[in-house]
Length: 221
Image (cartoon, rainbow, N blue to C red; front, top):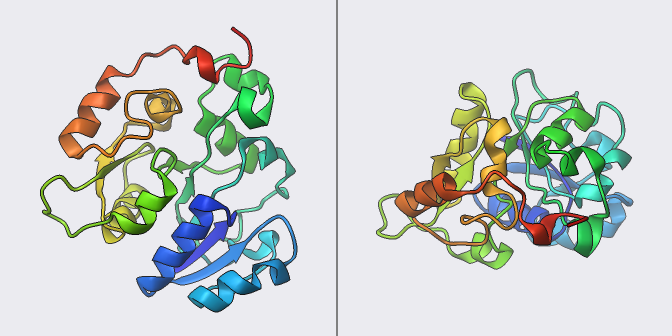
Protein backbone atom coordinates (compact mmCIF):
# COMPACT_ATOMS: atom_id res chain seq x y z
CA UNK A 1 0.00 0.00 0.00
CA UNK A 2 1.22 3.53 -0.73
CA UNK A 3 0.93 5.73 2.34
CA UNK A 4 1.62 9.45 2.55
CA UNK A 5 2.60 10.84 5.95
CA UNK A 6 2.62 14.59 6.56
CA UNK A 7 4.60 15.17 9.73
CA UNK A 8 7.67 13.33 10.99
CA UNK A 9 7.56 13.99 14.71
CA UNK A 10 7.08 11.38 17.42
CA UNK A 11 3.91 9.86 15.96
CA UNK A 12 4.58 10.53 12.27
CA UNK A 13 8.14 9.25 12.55
CA UNK A 14 7.05 6.18 14.49
CA UNK A 15 4.37 5.36 11.93
CA UNK A 16 6.97 5.76 9.19
CA UNK A 17 9.16 3.20 10.94
CA UNK A 18 6.37 0.75 11.67
CA UNK A 19 4.61 0.95 8.31
CA UNK A 20 7.76 0.57 6.24
CA UNK A 21 8.70 -2.44 8.38
CA UNK A 22 5.33 -3.94 7.44
CA UNK A 23 6.19 -3.57 3.76
CA UNK A 24 4.21 -0.46 2.90
CA UNK A 25 5.57 2.18 0.53
CA UNK A 26 5.77 5.34 2.63
CA UNK A 27 6.26 8.87 1.36
CA UNK A 28 6.99 11.13 4.34
CA UNK A 29 7.23 14.90 4.61
CA UNK A 30 7.79 17.58 7.19
CA UNK A 31 7.46 21.36 7.05
CA UNK A 32 10.97 21.73 5.63
CA UNK A 33 12.91 20.28 2.70
CA UNK A 34 13.03 16.52 2.06
CA UNK A 35 16.77 16.58 2.71
CA UNK A 36 16.07 17.17 6.39
CA UNK A 37 14.52 13.69 6.52
CA UNK A 38 17.53 11.95 4.98
CA UNK A 39 18.34 10.01 8.16
CA UNK A 40 14.77 8.76 8.57
CA UNK A 41 14.63 7.79 4.90
CA UNK A 42 17.95 5.94 5.12
CA UNK A 43 16.85 4.12 8.29
CA UNK A 44 13.45 3.02 7.03
CA UNK A 45 13.51 2.99 3.23
CA UNK A 46 10.75 5.60 3.15
CA UNK A 47 10.84 8.27 0.46
CA UNK A 48 11.25 11.82 1.76
CA UNK A 49 9.15 14.29 -0.23
CA UNK A 50 7.75 17.79 -0.07
CA UNK A 51 4.56 18.07 2.01
CA UNK A 52 2.66 19.09 -1.12
CA UNK A 53 3.58 15.75 -2.74
CA UNK A 54 3.09 13.35 0.17
CA UNK A 55 -0.52 12.45 -0.69
CA UNK A 56 0.06 11.90 -4.41
CA UNK A 57 -1.48 8.55 -5.47
CA UNK A 58 -1.69 7.48 -1.83
CA UNK A 59 -4.04 4.72 -0.68
CA UNK A 60 -3.94 6.28 2.79
CA UNK A 61 -2.83 9.68 4.07
CA UNK A 62 -1.79 10.47 7.64
CA UNK A 63 -1.60 14.05 8.93
CA UNK A 64 0.43 14.24 12.13
CA UNK A 65 1.46 17.81 12.93
CA UNK A 66 0.93 20.31 15.76
CA UNK A 67 -2.65 21.57 15.72
CA UNK A 68 -1.54 25.18 15.39
CA UNK A 69 0.26 24.35 12.13
CA UNK A 70 -2.77 22.94 10.28
CA UNK A 71 -3.70 26.36 8.80
CA UNK A 72 -0.21 26.50 7.27
CA UNK A 73 -0.80 23.42 5.11
CA UNK A 74 -1.10 24.16 1.40
CA UNK A 75 -4.65 24.29 0.03
CA UNK A 76 -5.67 20.90 -1.33
CA UNK A 77 -2.83 19.18 0.54
CA UNK A 78 -4.56 15.76 0.38
CA UNK A 79 -6.45 16.18 -2.89
CA UNK A 80 -4.03 14.10 -4.98
CA UNK A 81 -4.63 10.92 -3.01
CA UNK A 82 -6.39 8.06 -4.76
CA UNK A 83 -10.19 8.38 -4.99
CA UNK A 84 -11.75 7.27 -1.72
CA UNK A 85 -8.42 7.01 0.10
CA UNK A 86 -9.02 7.75 3.79
CA UNK A 87 -7.20 10.49 5.69
CA UNK A 88 -6.10 9.90 9.28
CA UNK A 89 -5.32 12.80 11.57
CA UNK A 90 -3.46 12.19 14.82
CA UNK A 91 -3.48 15.75 16.14
CA UNK A 92 -4.28 17.06 19.61
CA UNK A 93 -5.18 20.57 20.70
CA UNK A 94 -2.98 21.79 23.55
CA UNK A 95 -3.99 25.46 23.94
CA UNK A 96 -1.92 26.26 27.02
CA UNK A 97 1.04 24.04 26.31
CA UNK A 98 1.63 24.75 22.60
CA UNK A 99 -1.16 25.80 20.26
CA UNK A 100 -2.70 28.93 21.70
CA UNK A 101 -6.40 29.65 21.42
CA UNK A 102 -8.31 28.22 18.45
CA UNK A 103 -11.71 29.83 18.70
CA UNK A 104 -13.79 27.22 16.86
CA UNK A 105 -12.43 24.39 18.99
CA UNK A 106 -12.97 26.39 22.17
CA UNK A 107 -16.57 26.95 21.00
CA UNK A 108 -17.17 23.20 20.76
CA UNK A 109 -16.03 22.01 17.34
CA UNK A 110 -14.12 18.76 17.72
CA UNK A 111 -10.41 18.91 17.01
CA UNK A 112 -10.79 16.46 14.12
CA UNK A 113 -13.72 18.28 12.55
CA UNK A 114 -11.63 21.46 12.62
CA UNK A 115 -8.77 19.68 10.83
CA UNK A 116 -11.19 18.22 8.27
CA UNK A 117 -12.61 21.67 7.60
CA UNK A 118 -9.19 23.19 7.00
CA UNK A 119 -7.83 20.45 4.75
CA UNK A 120 -11.09 20.03 2.86
CA UNK A 121 -11.46 16.29 3.38
CA UNK A 122 -13.16 13.97 5.88
CA UNK A 123 -10.81 12.41 8.41
CA UNK A 124 -10.46 9.52 10.83
CA UNK A 125 -9.06 10.23 14.28
CA UNK A 126 -6.66 7.59 15.61
CA UNK A 127 -3.16 7.34 17.13
CA UNK A 128 -3.68 10.62 19.00
CA UNK A 129 -3.80 9.11 22.47
CA UNK A 130 -1.11 6.43 22.50
CA UNK A 131 2.41 7.17 23.76
CA UNK A 132 4.73 7.02 20.75
CA UNK A 133 7.07 4.52 22.40
CA UNK A 134 4.14 2.17 22.97
CA UNK A 135 3.07 2.62 19.33
CA UNK A 136 6.60 1.64 18.37
CA UNK A 137 7.03 -1.41 20.58
CA UNK A 138 3.80 -2.66 22.18
CA UNK A 139 1.90 -4.00 19.21
CA UNK A 140 0.97 -7.69 19.50
CA UNK A 141 -0.70 -10.40 17.46
CA UNK A 142 -4.47 -10.41 17.14
CA UNK A 143 -6.04 -12.44 19.92
CA UNK A 144 -3.26 -11.72 22.42
CA UNK A 145 -4.83 -11.32 25.89
CA UNK A 146 -4.76 -7.69 26.96
CA UNK A 147 -3.93 -6.46 23.45
CA UNK A 148 -3.96 -2.65 23.45
CA UNK A 149 -6.94 -1.16 21.64
CA UNK A 150 -7.07 2.17 19.82
CA UNK A 151 -10.28 4.13 19.26
CA UNK A 152 -11.00 5.15 15.68
CA UNK A 153 -13.51 7.94 15.10
CA UNK A 154 -14.92 8.53 11.64
CA UNK A 155 -17.53 7.46 9.12
CA UNK A 156 -18.29 3.78 8.53
CA UNK A 157 -17.53 2.28 5.15
CA UNK A 158 -14.54 1.27 3.07
CA UNK A 159 -12.33 4.02 4.49
CA UNK A 160 -12.98 2.88 8.05
CA UNK A 161 -12.34 -0.73 7.03
CA UNK A 162 -8.91 0.23 5.70
CA UNK A 163 -8.04 2.26 8.80
CA UNK A 164 -9.12 -0.64 11.02
CA UNK A 165 -6.91 -2.96 8.96
CA UNK A 166 -3.88 -0.71 9.39
CA UNK A 167 -4.42 -0.47 13.16
CA UNK A 168 -4.62 -4.26 13.35
CA UNK A 169 -1.49 -4.69 11.20
CA UNK A 170 0.36 -2.42 13.61
CA UNK A 171 -0.58 -4.75 16.46
CA UNK A 172 -3.57 -3.07 18.09
CA UNK A 173 -7.29 -3.75 18.28
CA UNK A 174 -9.32 -1.07 16.48
CA UNK A 175 -12.40 0.07 18.38
CA UNK A 176 -15.18 2.06 16.73
CA UNK A 177 -15.14 5.49 18.35
CA UNK A 178 -18.26 6.70 16.59
CA UNK A 179 -18.56 9.47 14.00
CA UNK A 180 -16.08 12.33 13.87
CA UNK A 181 -18.63 14.46 15.73
CA UNK A 182 -18.02 12.21 18.74
CA UNK A 183 -14.22 12.24 18.48
CA UNK A 184 -14.22 14.46 21.58
CA UNK A 185 -14.47 11.19 23.47
CA UNK A 186 -10.76 10.53 22.73
CA UNK A 187 -9.42 14.07 22.90
CA UNK A 188 -6.81 15.04 25.56
CA UNK A 189 -8.01 14.77 29.13
CA UNK A 190 -10.65 12.11 28.46
CA UNK A 191 -10.68 8.72 30.23
CA UNK A 192 -9.24 6.86 27.23
CA UNK A 193 -6.49 9.36 26.40
CA UNK A 194 -3.00 8.09 27.15
CA UNK A 195 -4.23 4.73 28.42
CA UNK A 196 -3.31 1.26 27.18
CA UNK A 197 -6.71 -0.36 27.69
CA UNK A 198 -7.86 -3.46 25.89
CA UNK A 199 -10.92 -3.34 23.65
CA UNK A 200 -13.47 -3.63 26.46
CA UNK A 201 -11.66 -1.06 28.58
CA UNK A 202 -11.43 1.31 25.64
CA UNK A 203 -15.16 1.06 24.97
CA UNK A 204 -15.93 1.74 28.63
CA UNK A 205 -13.61 4.74 28.69
CA UNK A 206 -15.18 6.20 25.55
CA UNK A 207 -18.64 5.81 27.07
CA UNK A 208 -17.53 7.56 30.27
CA UNK A 209 -16.07 10.62 28.53
CA UNK A 210 -17.63 13.93 29.62
CA UNK A 211 -18.90 16.16 26.82
CA UNK A 212 -17.32 19.25 28.35
CA UNK A 213 -13.67 19.88 27.47
CA UNK A 214 -11.46 19.38 30.57
CA UNK A 215 -10.26 22.65 32.08
CA UNK A 216 -6.59 21.80 31.57
CA UNK A 217 -7.21 21.61 27.83
CA UNK A 218 -9.07 24.88 27.41
CA UNK A 219 -7.32 28.13 26.62
CA UNK A 220 -9.47 29.95 29.13
CA UNK A 221 -11.24 28.66 32.23
